[in-house]
Length: 254
Ligand code: PEP
Image (cartoon, rainbow, N blue to C red):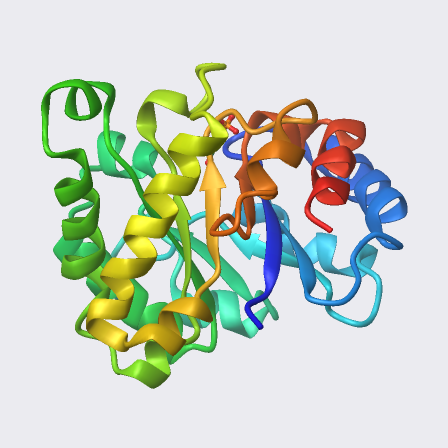
């Protein structure tokens, strides 16, 4: 059975004291909700990851994630964080290919393929983001575009490596805009993407792949989105910054 997961993407938000307060609140509120096949990941700014570890309960069902990592292990890349660095502080997840990074930092499918490799080589689970713009959705082959993102960044992986990848479908037009994909739109895309994965890795591997939805998912709409058969949880931006809202989203994923 594939795992269900809710990951919070804090982006570039919260001072240190605010981060400690939010993690403590979230852990308190969600620790009894994370059972069975469900997991919660808090992708905080990297600078806080080491310090925040101590606020997590033992058992590993609530863990920390980074929001990016560089493809190189070390070197003259000022300001960057590498996968071995994340591994060395016990981080288990890393978001890769978020649309904001693709847009503002020009991350390409080819570069992301290398980042996926770096993450996997260091025992990190990539939460690999894909998704189309509004213009693409309205005027283009949006399904082909998103499939290509998966093909170019993931399909070089062996089946064994691929089994460790989580995918997040995040239509760009829904991220931070308050516009959510309808539950039917999300389900349709997730089913299509799962079929695309099956074409490469086979039905069983595709059925075992966790595919999250992201894009203005919140306390009000999460239950309906997560009830779709091919939606296995969410990558949550804005709503992950408020403990009560995030807890409601986590509960909706059970
Ligand atoms: C995100 O940043 O991945 C995201 C989905 O943001 P929001 O929930 O705010 O749309």
